[in-house]
Image (tube, rainbow, N blue to C red; front, side):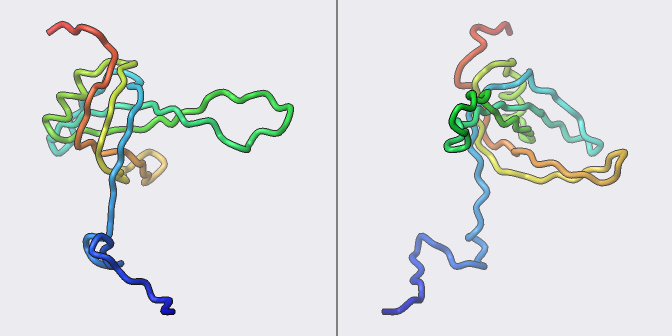
Length: 136
């Protein structure tokens, strides 16, 4: 019996351009209204934070330990396109939102030197619930 792996059409070869995948799907609560910023280049972006609850950790508690508080992940989301900016700027704090996009690492200069941050670059921003009627 051969130990070599047979590649199917659905699995690209390692090293080929199509073997990478960077997809993010989030569903969570908007921490606060999105903020619009103008970059030094003149580009406009909208930035928001999405709070996603973590499922309870399994097997980490010892017998007799009290239950820990629920934990969350707070994820920065940046919207570059006009459509995602508009959708983000309509959101209010506590709205439940779905975001689809890609994870990006951004580098920037700060007082302490060069730093980096991970954020989700949104391709789709959609409010799922919350907010009720909004004025126009």
